[in-house]
Length: 85
Length: 85
DNA sequence: TAGTCATTTAGACAAATATCTAATTATTAT
DNA sequence: ATAATAATTAGATATTTGTCTAAATGACTA
Image (cartoon, rainbow over all chains, first blue to last red; front, side):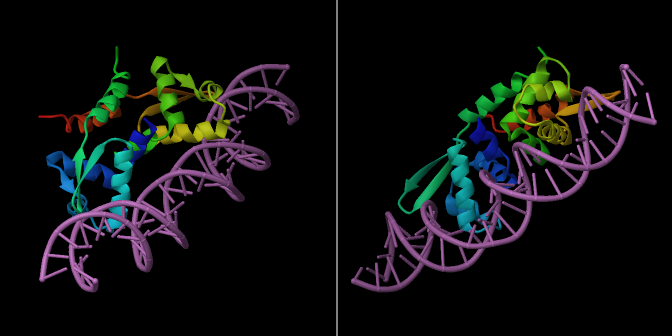
Protein backbone atom coordinates (compact mmCIF):
# COMPACT_ATOMS: atom_id res chain seq x y z
CA UNK A 1 0.00 0.00 0.00
CA UNK A 2 2.88 2.32 0.80
CA UNK A 3 4.62 1.63 -2.48
CA UNK A 4 1.35 2.17 -4.31
CA UNK A 5 0.62 5.60 -2.88
CA UNK A 6 4.25 6.56 -3.25
CA UNK A 7 4.22 5.61 -6.91
CA UNK A 8 1.04 7.57 -7.54
CA UNK A 9 2.39 10.66 -5.82
CA UNK A 10 4.08 12.11 -8.88
CA UNK A 11 2.46 13.70 -11.93
CA UNK A 12 4.97 12.21 -14.35
CA UNK A 13 4.32 8.71 -13.10
CA UNK A 14 0.58 9.22 -13.30
CA UNK A 15 1.01 10.48 -16.86
CA UNK A 16 2.99 7.34 -17.67
CA UNK A 17 0.12 5.21 -16.40
CA UNK A 18 -2.30 7.13 -18.57
CA UNK A 19 -0.02 6.60 -21.55
CA UNK A 20 0.10 2.88 -20.91
CA UNK A 21 -3.65 2.78 -20.61
CA UNK A 22 -3.77 3.00 -24.39
CA UNK A 23 -1.23 0.30 -25.08
CA UNK A 24 2.07 -1.18 -23.85
CA UNK A 25 5.18 0.75 -24.81
CA UNK A 26 8.93 0.46 -24.64
CA UNK A 27 10.98 2.50 -22.19
CA UNK A 28 12.25 4.66 -25.03
CA UNK A 29 8.78 5.37 -26.39
CA UNK A 30 7.65 6.36 -22.95
CA UNK A 31 10.65 8.63 -22.45
CA UNK A 32 9.91 10.34 -25.78
CA UNK A 33 6.67 11.67 -24.32
CA UNK A 34 8.42 13.64 -21.63
CA UNK A 35 11.12 16.23 -21.35
CA UNK A 36 13.10 14.40 -18.72
CA UNK A 37 16.20 12.38 -19.38
CA UNK A 38 15.97 8.66 -20.01
CA UNK A 39 17.54 7.74 -16.69
CA UNK A 40 14.92 9.84 -14.94
CA UNK A 41 12.10 8.06 -16.75
CA UNK A 42 13.78 4.74 -16.10
CA UNK A 43 13.72 5.55 -12.43
CA UNK A 44 10.03 6.44 -12.54
CA UNK A 45 9.31 3.17 -14.30
CA UNK A 46 11.21 1.37 -11.59
CA UNK A 47 9.00 2.89 -8.90
CA UNK A 48 5.88 2.00 -10.87
CA UNK A 49 7.17 -1.56 -11.12
CA UNK A 50 7.92 -1.71 -7.41
CA UNK A 51 4.31 -0.74 -6.78
CA UNK A 52 3.25 -3.44 -9.22
CA UNK A 53 1.44 -0.85 -11.29
CA UNK A 54 3.30 -1.96 -14.41
CA UNK A 55 5.12 -5.06 -15.52
CA UNK A 56 8.15 -5.12 -17.79
CA UNK A 57 9.16 -7.55 -20.44
CA UNK A 58 12.54 -7.55 -22.13
CA UNK A 59 12.66 -8.51 -25.81
CA UNK A 60 16.14 -8.14 -27.16
CA UNK A 61 17.33 -4.65 -26.37
CA UNK A 62 13.84 -3.34 -25.84
CA UNK A 63 11.95 -3.38 -22.57
CA UNK A 64 8.21 -3.15 -22.94
CA UNK A 65 6.12 -1.84 -20.08
CA UNK A 66 2.52 -2.87 -19.59
CA UNK A 67 -0.11 -1.46 -17.28
CA UNK A 68 -1.11 -3.82 -14.51
CA UNK A 69 -4.53 -3.02 -13.10
CA UNK A 70 -4.86 -5.61 -10.37
CA UNK A 71 -3.19 -3.45 -7.76
CA UNK A 72 -5.49 -0.57 -8.62
CA UNK A 73 -8.30 -2.78 -7.44
CA UNK A 74 -6.65 -2.84 -4.06
CA UNK A 75 -6.72 0.94 -4.02
CA UNK A 76 -10.34 0.84 -5.09
CA UNK A 77 -11.14 -1.38 -2.13
CA UNK A 78 -9.37 0.96 0.26
CA UNK A 79 -11.31 3.82 -1.20
CA UNK A 80 -14.71 2.17 -0.98
CA UNK A 81 -14.24 1.62 2.73
CA UNK A 82 -14.88 5.34 3.10
CA UNK A 83 -18.16 5.38 1.23
CA UNK A 84 -21.21 6.09 3.32
CA UNK A 85 -22.45 2.67 4.47
CA UNK B 1 -5.06 16.13 -7.70
CA UNK B 2 -1.47 16.71 -6.66
CA UNK B 3 -2.45 17.76 -3.15
CA UNK B 4 -4.70 14.73 -2.91
CA UNK B 5 -2.07 12.16 -3.79
CA UNK B 6 0.46 13.97 -1.67
CA UNK B 7 -1.84 13.87 1.33
CA UNK B 8 -2.52 10.17 0.85
CA UNK B 9 1.17 9.35 0.57
CA UNK B 10 1.78 8.93 4.27
CA UNK B 11 0.64 6.09 6.54
CA UNK B 12 -0.10 8.39 9.47
CA UNK B 13 -2.36 10.58 7.38
CA UNK B 14 -4.18 7.56 6.01
CA UNK B 15 -4.64 6.30 9.56
CA UNK B 16 -6.08 9.68 10.52
CA UNK B 17 -8.61 9.37 7.71
CA UNK B 18 -9.60 5.92 8.91
CA UNK B 19 -10.01 7.31 12.43
CA UNK B 20 -12.27 10.06 11.18
CA UNK B 21 -14.30 7.58 9.22
CA UNK B 22 -15.90 6.58 12.53
CA UNK B 23 -16.66 10.09 13.73
CA UNK B 24 -15.31 13.65 13.82
CA UNK B 25 -12.63 14.31 16.42
CA UNK B 26 -10.68 17.19 17.87
CA UNK B 27 -7.01 17.71 17.03
CA UNK B 28 -6.05 16.54 20.52
CA UNK B 29 -8.10 13.36 20.31
CA UNK B 30 -6.52 12.56 16.99
CA UNK B 31 -3.04 13.21 18.34
CA UNK B 32 -3.70 10.86 21.28
CA UNK B 33 -3.97 7.97 18.83
CA UNK B 34 -0.40 8.37 17.65
CA UNK B 35 3.05 8.54 19.13
CA UNK B 36 4.03 11.69 17.33
CA UNK B 37 4.05 15.13 18.86
CA UNK B 38 1.04 17.39 18.58
CA UNK B 39 2.74 19.79 16.19
CA UNK B 40 3.52 16.88 13.91
CA UNK B 41 -0.10 15.75 13.90
CA UNK B 42 -1.20 19.34 13.41
CA UNK B 43 0.97 19.47 10.33
CA UNK B 44 -0.52 16.25 8.99
CA UNK B 45 -4.00 17.65 9.55
CA UNK B 46 -3.00 20.75 7.66
CA UNK B 47 -1.96 18.69 4.64
CA UNK B 48 -5.21 16.73 4.79
CA UNK B 49 -7.10 20.01 4.87
CA UNK B 50 -5.12 21.38 1.93
CA UNK B 51 -6.19 18.32 -0.03
CA UNK B 52 -9.75 18.93 1.09
CA UNK B 53 -9.87 15.48 2.62
CA UNK B 54 -10.98 16.91 5.94
CA UNK B 55 -12.64 20.09 7.10
CA UNK B 56 -12.00 21.79 10.42
CA UNK B 57 -14.33 23.66 12.70
CA UNK B 58 -13.20 25.68 15.68
CA UNK B 59 -15.44 25.70 18.74
CA UNK B 60 -13.80 27.65 21.54
CA UNK B 61 -10.34 26.26 22.05
CA UNK B 62 -11.12 23.00 20.30
CA UNK B 63 -10.78 22.33 16.61
CA UNK B 64 -12.87 19.47 15.34
CA UNK B 65 -11.84 17.68 12.17
CA UNK B 66 -14.36 15.95 9.95
CA UNK B 67 -13.81 13.61 7.03
CA UNK B 68 -14.80 15.07 3.70
CA UNK B 69 -15.50 12.42 1.11
CA UNK B 70 -16.31 14.49 -1.93
CA UNK B 71 -12.70 14.72 -3.05
CA UNK B 72 -12.33 10.97 -2.74
CA UNK B 73 -14.92 10.75 -5.47
CA UNK B 74 -12.54 12.61 -7.71
CA UNK B 75 -9.92 9.97 -7.01
CA UNK B 76 -12.51 7.30 -7.70
CA UNK B 77 -13.18 8.86 -11.09
CA UNK B 78 -9.50 8.95 -11.93
CA UNK B 79 -9.23 5.33 -10.95
CA UNK B 80 -12.19 4.15 -12.98
CA UNK B 81 -10.68 5.59 -16.12
CA UNK B 82 -8.27 2.66 -15.98
CA UNK B 83 -10.90 -0.03 -15.79
CA UNK B 84 -11.17 -2.28 -18.80
CA UNK B 85 -13.76 -0.64 -21.02
C1' DT C 1 35.38 -7.37 -33.98
C1' DA C 2 33.89 -2.73 -33.77
C1' DG C 3 30.38 0.36 -33.50
C1' DT C 4 25.82 1.72 -32.40
C1' DC C 5 21.48 1.62 -30.03
C1' DA C 6 18.26 0.77 -25.81
C1' DT C 7 18.25 0.71 -21.27
C1' DT C 8 19.82 0.70 -16.61
C1' DT C 9 23.11 1.72 -12.77
C1' DA C 10 25.99 4.88 -10.07
C1' DG C 11 26.82 8.94 -7.93
C1' DA C 12 25.88 13.78 -7.05
C1' DC C 13 22.88 17.52 -5.67
C1' DA C 14 18.98 20.63 -4.77
C1' DA C 15 14.36 20.56 -3.14
C1' DA C 16 10.72 18.56 -0.50
C1' DT C 17 9.22 16.02 3.58
C1' DA C 18 8.49 14.34 8.38
C1' DT C 19 9.80 15.06 12.61
C1' DC C 20 11.15 17.48 16.83
C1' DT C 21 11.38 21.34 20.57
C1' DA C 22 10.33 26.00 21.76
C1' DA C 23 7.43 29.82 21.28
C1' DT C 24 2.95 31.90 20.21
C1' DT C 25 -2.06 32.54 20.04
C1' DA C 26 -6.54 32.00 21.65
C1' DT C 27 -9.76 30.41 25.00
C1' DT C 28 -11.45 29.00 29.46
C1' DA C 29 -11.28 28.81 34.53
C1' DT C 30 -9.80 30.43 39.17
C1' DA D 1 -5.42 39.33 36.32
C1' DT D 2 -3.26 34.86 36.21
C1' DA D 3 -2.83 30.39 35.22
C1' DA D 4 -3.96 26.43 32.56
C1' DT D 5 -5.38 24.16 28.33
C1' DA D 6 -5.80 23.38 23.07
C1' DA D 7 -3.87 24.12 19.11
C1' DT D 8 -0.87 26.24 15.74
C1' DT D 9 3.40 28.56 14.05
C1' DA D 10 8.43 28.94 13.72
C1' DG D 11 12.68 27.16 13.08
C1' DA D 12 15.96 23.34 12.94
C1' DT D 13 17.46 18.85 11.17
C1' DA D 14 17.84 14.27 9.13
C1' DT D 15 15.84 11.64 5.43
C1' DT D 16 13.68 11.00 1.10
C1' DT D 17 12.85 12.35 -3.53
C1' DG D 18 13.40 13.90 -8.40
C1' DT D 19 16.57 15.16 -11.38
C1' DC D 20 20.92 15.27 -13.91
C1' DT D 21 25.42 13.54 -16.27
C1' DA D 22 28.62 9.89 -16.85
C1' DA D 23 29.42 5.14 -16.99
C1' DA D 24 28.06 0.32 -17.59
C1' DT D 25 25.43 -3.53 -19.62
C1' DG D 26 23.48 -6.04 -23.17
C1' DA D 27 21.98 -6.77 -27.89
C1' DC D 28 22.04 -5.98 -32.75
C1' DT D 29 24.65 -4.81 -37.22
C1' DA D 30 28.17 -3.99 -40.64
